[in-house]
Image 1 (cartoon, one colour):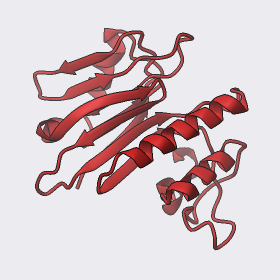
Image 2: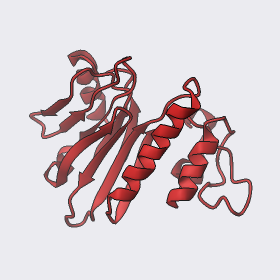
Image 3: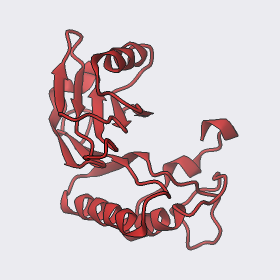
Length: 197
């Protein structure tokens, strides 16, 4: 079993927030932490004394976006390189190894509702293309879609669970993506207290 976490970093542009991330990560059990909104101007690949590996991509020219991953020592031998596909989409591939089968983890940071429809559509088109082009047994998409989803509204929405909260304007495009790729919205499958969504 692989324990995958997510973290909206707000910035990992300097050493201080990276040290804070590492300190906090060592207090939890994780194999991979997907990082969004890193806001780095230059990519970073770092291997620490503990064996943890940090891969950070870059943000756009406005200082927005940037994704990355922190990989725990337990999986460091199984890493195929982390790839930043766009400033909002990254891909980590884990090699096939016992007992973990091949796994591809996409880390995303979707545009918020403040962005125009063309930018949002371009993000989802890129994500769908990258999702379909790489064939692996297991695929996971994690991080921030900036969308709120309510419980399943009809039997056709099998990809959505029974435990959402509410809809916002971003969720329609997310729902279309999920249906087109035949994926499952995992966060709506489990009931959690309202503040933890």
